[in-house]
Length: 86
Figure 1 (cartoon, one colour):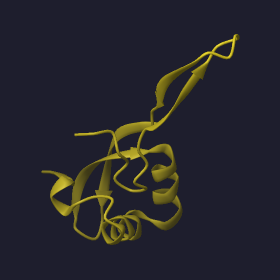
Figure 2 (cartoon, one colour):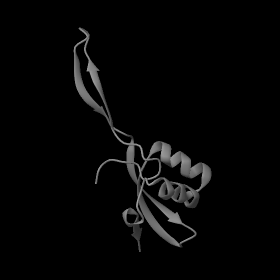
Figure 3 (cartoon, one colour):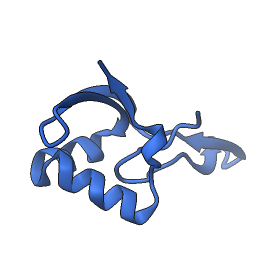
Figure 4 (cartoon, one colour):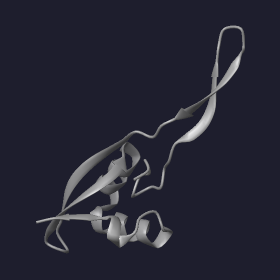
């Protein structure tokens, strides 16, 4: 699975390393992504999501259910990509 946030849709972007002599070489800026378990109250189950730090702040602000509905509507994650635990 590629490194994409399931809540915000953030992914790695390209850029350049610039040396002191201004020589440019290609590099990637990776997203701050980690795997986190959440308790989904509406479905009464635990789920695991690959989210970024910005996605975690969004869940803390608007709630897990609203964030998942927003991500599914925007197409950032599929229902089959959400891992249900137990």
